[in-house]
Length: 130
Length: 408
Image (cartoon, rainbow over all chains, first blue to last red; front, side, top):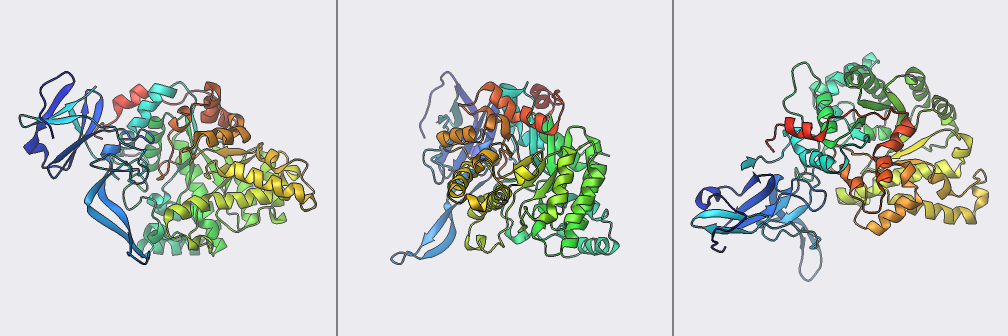
């Protein structure tokens, strides 16, 4: 997280200490829709448009990442498990899943969310749009 | 600046689909759009259907099950524990219930109207959902009873409520005589614009037991649709341990079998005016089957002596719906649309509110289609096939956006 000064296109969306109480807030800012996520000390902001079909990706659920467990040495399946340390953003339209921190699709790394620059400025969460 | 709610099972359809409305405003607000395949979640209104069963014994049995363990799946053969369409609740519109229904209005009609307005549709053809598996029901008489009741519910209760809603009559195909009676009864019904067989079944569709039925449908001039589906209980598909693979293969499997039987038994020559429509198998299977059958039949013409053209040529004269349209490889999709003559034979379908639905933008966003081809696929081909008047029925996208709740 970097400190940022006020610049064109910058929008303060509120106090960090208040917003971080939520995992996510989705905002319509003069027609631009953005999902802002708070996880641990990290903040991420993504355009609320799925690269698949243009769905409202940030308004779906956030879920733990699903993993395929494999036994080392034998290659045997340990079944599907949930990794609660990694959160995924799920598009409610068709289920595309993106890593909350990287914006990268769970399987196809070429399919990504579009980031919105976000910074902390004097305790405010500031997005840079445009 | 305002905060938007999460989209969930109780979100208003107009909010869930607001992005599709914006796509309509940007790309196709002036197009005539027909959705050939949307769905009723009939389990939500199953008591209304059960009470219309003619047979007193089955109606009593169904009503008893409604109050008991089966609940909204009374008399049906779906397996709720294997119904993974929502991907563990990740996709919330599958099985959703529409909120804020105005008093005196039917929840299904309101939900359908909101989806039509939000996606920019002039007409929507509605199919059942759980009933798609009835072809595998072990009790043929139950399929007949539910077909009769569902058709009555659709034609008498639902369709009169909105002229934009149309239906293809459900045919209980395991009992040909019952299908014939339904065709006789509903052939002239205004809003019944064709007939449908749910493809998930093990019936040889070229069997002579259907000859009279096909002749009757041919006489009506209305199309016959085969709507595909899945069946995890099929021994081949029981090898698949994920819903995704079972779903991907079985939806194409049943229609491939039926098309193959239709062609090799020369049904297009025997019923030349019968308009055949293949629903909900996507497009990728079409060039595969065209090539595969051409390859085999050229070497074994004595097994298909009634055919006067290549299988691919017959297939290119049939009609197909678009959803779920595979589009991860544009070169393959462009080739597919070329060989199947998509500009005249392809009909847009949404499959809303099912999990793998397609918005009309799947067609408008294709870079290789002309504007006329997009207009044909989105509505004009359907108007030609179903004899629909090409006249705008939908509100403008701006008005839909202005009137939506706007919470999500």
